[in-house]
Image (cartoon, rainbow, N blue to C red):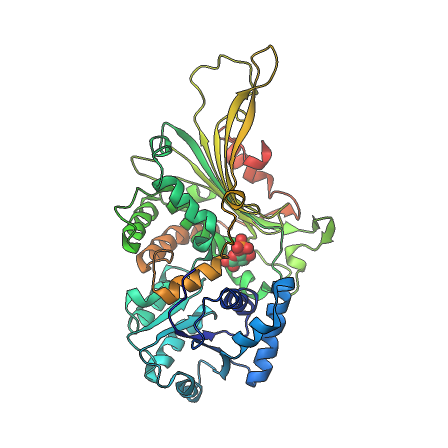
Length: 486
Ligand code: BG6
């Protein structure tokens, strides 16, 4: 892989969960792969008054924990030499002034301000670095989700950040876009002619997107209880996946060509509001149960969650896209915590044959399906009917599997490694544009408003199950079933 241009990266929220779990291990891996120029620098910035040594101890511990046997003391020593620490409280002007020293004399170098902080600190942090003259023409800012909590707060962040950075300098991260299978979906759709004639109404009967997690809220109860599954997963990851599946072929691989097409999909989503939002959405909250063979507490008993919380940990909904390609094709979306397993997949189910001449299982089992699995075991499977060996003409489902790991035996980048590389290279293709984000919020807000207006409290489901029974009824009413129920 090509070496990256020299960069300076200031990691705000540098002691936080995301930095420790994902970003710093990702930087380690790129460094170990020889992609980081030796004069690149990483400045951890957070509120705690740590010395450089104390910060390095934390980073080393997290890299060791996440890399296991791949951790190599020599690689670490090399990376550690490039890391420093600066205490920055976003409300202290003095602290921002202290950032000048590690960046001095590097005005012509790519400069990345990575804001892995709460969204209410995005604008003040950008204003802080701007006040101290740290925003150079080569600077860019990275904003981690959640980008606000509704259309209004997100627009306010956009306004204030946009007053300092041009749109081409703003990288809004949705880490799902960095996943290899999502990019493979683009390759499958726009690198082949095979699927294009089938990719539409009349050929596809419905689409399902499932982002299921077996984990609960872990140590993020405070954030999660204020956010809920609709804003944590549907507003961003699920809608991004939906727009990639549903978009028209872009005219080129230019970032804006792709983002223009995604935007059109988001704008064509039929609004879900009022009573209709109630009948087409299911909210759930997990109660005590068991996952992976061990008992787990219910959401309301999680530490940091209020015992009468009405935050949803599960959402299922039926979306429709009002376009010529997709009119009448339902998109069923669902996500939840503490479900039976970790599973992220997109399933496109094709229409049935007009005449069933052979003995075969009853639909929906026998329908052709294209399954795009993001995790675990990334891959794409096409399920078709084949003849079961023997005298009789019995048809049974068989799978044509595309296993990219097996075929291309080459190391793969994790989503954050890929996105960090793109940020340093200045490639915006896999990042959300301001208007996309606004369109997504404008579709999400009325759903939440309807839930509030009609007091729609979440239905409980047992931890370790596939969510409330109402989610099966939602799709079952249209004669379909979730893929795990087939
Ligand atoms: C994050 C959400 O964006 O995505 C988390 O805030 C969720 O709640 C996570 O656990 C899931 O990401 P992944 O890559 O593990 O599926």
